[in-house]
Length: 107
Image 1: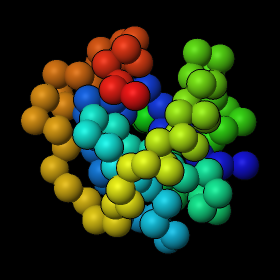
Image 2: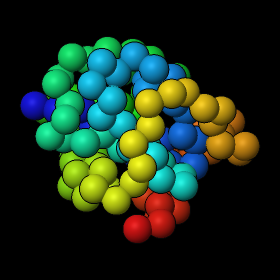
Image 3: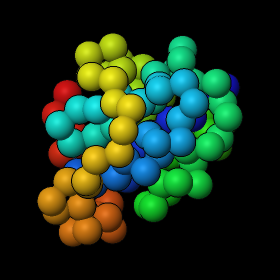
């Protein structure tokens, strides 16, 4: 099993989770973070660190977030590895409560 970054992260990109990951399995794109499924060791340290609850266990994903399993896998192959926290995106607070952000993700 792996953890998955879900739609909530889009346009927010809080990186609190990155600092606690013992295997550096987070990857960063312009508007979103992802977890590399083959590198994640299912330790669950990242999940409580996310201030907007954007990280979930693969087996606990709601039906409307299942596609993020594939999105995380695909984008982790092209995004750059991130190992240190950074500031969130400038408009993160504005986007925290926005729903249906999938269309904002530049694939």
